[in-house]
Image 1 (cartoon, rainbow, N blue to C red):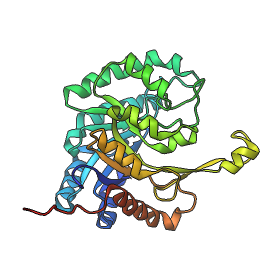
Image 2: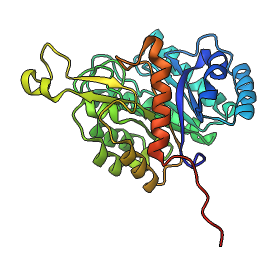
Image 3: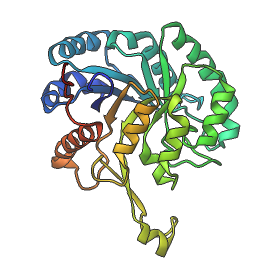
Amino acid sequence: MQESLRIGTLVRGGEAVQVIPQIVEHGFESFQLNFWQTIGDTDLVEAAARIRELAAEHHFVISAVGIYGNPLGGNPESGDTLAGWEQLIEHAHLFGTDIIGGFTGRLPGSSIDESLPRFAEVFGELSKRAADKGLRIAFENCAMGGSWQKGDWNIAHNPTAWEKMFNAVTADNLGLEWEPAHQLTALIDPIPQLRKWVDKIFHVHGKDVTIAWDIIKEYGIHGPKPYVWDRTPGFGDSNWTDIITILRQGGYQGTIDIEGWHDPVYRDELEMTGQVHALNYLKHCRGGSMIPNPVV
């Protein structure tokens, strides 16, 4: 059961060596290591060596490494993010993972269509470098406040954009780092989308939302009151039993890693309380513990 679909959580890459030993005993089976915009001064070789030791001791895996910034912008920050992608491609194998997650980026303030040529240029090259090392690239489906017409971070938040992206770069090692929360926020039903796109989903983030339909009906989605807020799995609207069923029916053999630090209720001193609840809830949706069949 665990080997075919592990449940874990996200950890900041620069803090992983300190944080993982404090939380692994709660039962997390995998960890994704994430960096925001730049690798910074993290020594990836040293960090990987220590994390491999922890993984051997506690029997977890590193599901993915990720860098979240805009590698397409053409400014110094984008240059740092692009360099981070290159560094993770060079070092991912040291962590025992074949997945690198992140945003596609986009031309700041420009439409998805206007950003596609630059996307094809950058990720056409990165996908080749990754493929040479047996790695896959998974794009998170977060809008980061953007729309089809403009935005500053990511074009991979809409299924029509996915079709355009994967037509622009026809590489088998490009896929999605999917979660239902971002689609529900856009009022997209994630279940039929998941059935359609499951073959392109390389990694799953465990994040959910609550949609306040009463507010939508009274104020709409552009009114003075928020109509949706992020939730830790187990507290939101998604049917994770259905999600896991569809993933398994589609042959998914990866992980679901909880993306914490967003829930407006289970936050601050309740952060890990919420995450461990989500961990146990997702394990329950997975089917609980593996029970051997009788031997005849």
